[in-house]
Image 1 (cartoon, rainbow, N blue to C red):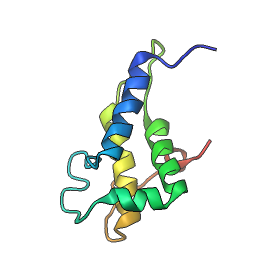
Image 2: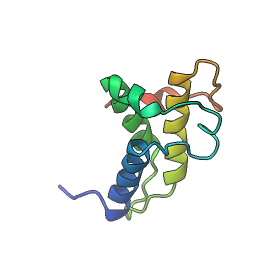
Image 3: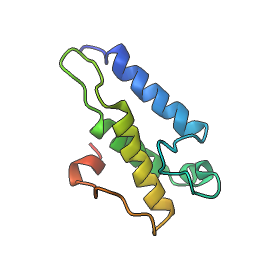
Image 4: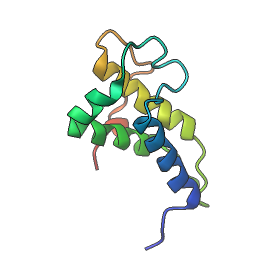
Length: 103
């Protein structure tokens, strides 16, 4: 079985880094959010699983293993987490089922 390419592994590693150090606020998703989301994320095991599922479901990888949308995948994951923490936050566009699927 082939390994994930360096590009894919790098995208996942950077996403994990941003989640872990509290800088998941890609673009403006968390710009006006008060507090540190990390405590909440670690309190809900399945939420962390879903966050990574969304990132990897949205991540687009070409046949040669090149990642084409690392920022967009992180953005969608950040939108899901912001909506989970703040019921007034509106995700645009709304999530499609495949984006949030746990496989």
